[in-house]
Image 1 (cartoon, rainbow, N blue to C red):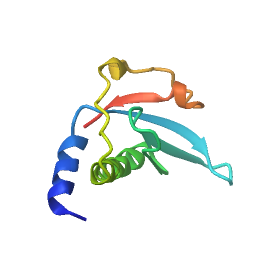
Image 2: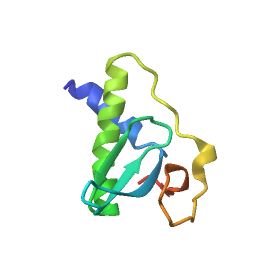
Image 3: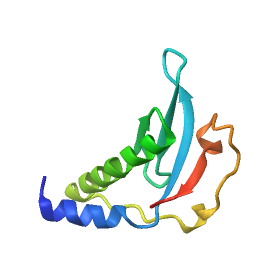
Image 4: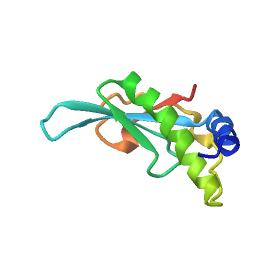
Amino acid sequence: MNKELLDQASALAARGYQVGVQREDNENGNPVWVAFVPEMPSCFAQADTVEGAIKALKIVREDYIYFLMKHGVPVPEPNPKSREINHNKTWTKRADAEVLNSE
């Protein structure tokens, strides 16, 4: 990876993107947590815990932005309208996912 481009991607990833978290079940019926960035289609990470999914998403978000930049694709801006937190804790559909402030 190009270090300069990666540094730029890291800086962009640190902007105020929202993070959604939803609970899903794996093939064995065990819960897994999926964290995603609503402004970035296909940018998500999963783990056995909410915290683990959010931590993994930080790396994925940087890589996602890096590859957008590398291929000349515009990086989505954080959506100021997605600042509201959805308190529906069912987490059964992406639309119902908890949206957290990015760190």
